[in-house]
Amino acid sequence: MAKYQTVMLDGSELSVKKAAAFINAGEVVGMPTETVYGLAADAFNEEAVAKIFAAKERPADNPLIVHISDLTMITGIAAELPQLAVTCAKRFWPGPLTMVLPKTPNVPFITSGGLDTVGVRMPSHPVARALIDAAGVPLAAPSANLSGSPSPTCAAHVLKDMNGRIPAIIDGGECDAGVESTVICFEEDGGSGKSAIKILRPGRITAQMLSEVTPHVLIDKGVLNAVENGAKVASPGMKYKHYAPKAKVTLVDGTAELFAEYVKAHAGQGTVCLVFRDTDIKGLPCIVIGDTAEEQAHRLFAALREADSMGAAEVFARCPTTDGVGLAVYNRLIRAAAFRVVKL
Ligand code: AMP
Ligand code: MG
Image 1 (tube, rainbow, N blue to C red):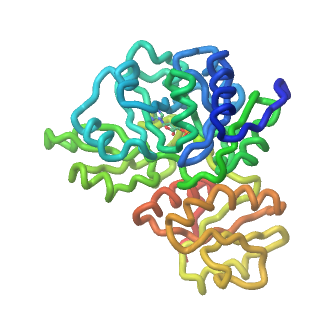
Image 2: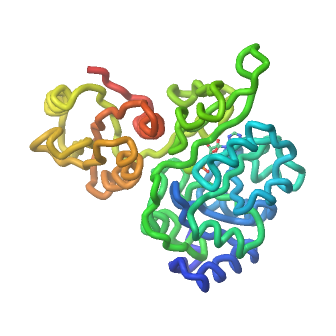
């Protein structure tokens, strides 16, 4: 699908202007954000948004997140703003939080994946914000990977997946968070009549952080579980194969000692281990993702891509905790592993 000579731009003002000119001409640009790289186009331009779906080979019912740089932009996008949404915006924006809200007719259905709602986020990355400002329109931007592959956390990953598919990528260095934004919606908490925040996709903004805004924080069951075939889901992205390297990934849940014992008994040619520390296992090729949930989030997708470049046939990954940002790491890894978990 080599349609473009993809150029790599730096994060300078001049480059951002060039990228904005592509956006205003109805094209798609790779942009850095504080979570992962995005594939950005004018959220109101149906033809431009169609190019995002084509470049990613993304299913049409998987909605895109609309990125804004200023709160005043939200009025053209969201038809209603519940009080809790205003509180969350004040507290967490700019930052890695996406709020699902009723959409205005301005937002084309191609952007919202056919839904009456739209996910809105105000990123904190200075280059993403400068690009939205320079383009003068909200940007629809999913992660800049081919559909199903690990999300890109540096410009080289975007180039690997998108070379020839888009005209330009802005290189803003390595992404800070490394996992995509926390996606939330608002609903009634049981029959209590109280409005609640429901986490549809975990990220850097954790359940604990959201519970400082309201005690009513729910976690959608799709966060930890596989979605059954044909089931209606709150967040359509959850039903698709995700984040997967070419290798078969298995999560192995146990202490470092038990992990090492299990992997040694099951390793074959092409086995690679995804571990927290380089002391976790000896004598097998390893990729270290770090001890803390924040480090693990930062390195996870690069590690899954590295497994591919090592030619791994099989990856045994240590199972992260589900506390704090760990829930986001676990949510991505369990999908990369197609829900294969060995409990020791
Ligand atoms: P990505 O663009 O790759 O970060 O994926 C965006 C995620 O946000 C997907 O998992 C979508 O299902 C979710 N999302 C975006 N818009 C909505 C919406 N209107 N309702 C529910 N989930 C949404
Ligand atoms: Mg994605």
